[in-house]
Length: 88
Image 1 (cartoon, rainbow, N blue to C red):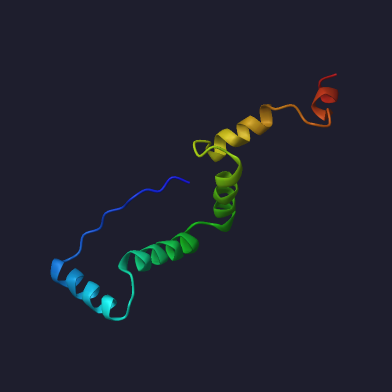
Image 2 (cartoon, rainbow, N blue to C red):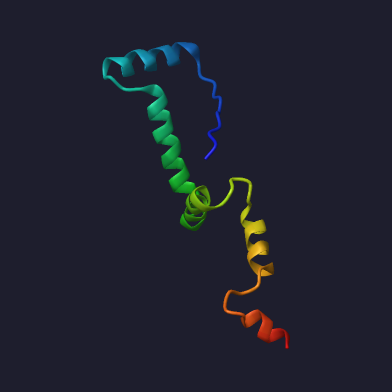
């Protein structure tokens, strides 16, 4: 999955302080921020959407949207031929 960046602003003095004290505890600011974002993702994104995204990362191209995927599935003939029988 393609990674994207975000930018946040914080008071410089506070940022220097958090970096300094995290360093003393061998904590990594970037990793802590990533962990916090992951928790937000899990809190706000419904599990069904997360499952869809996880499956999409493995099976489908990253550009396919859920709506386009459903349309594609509807337009494809059924594997067991049931769609053909309904037309007769």
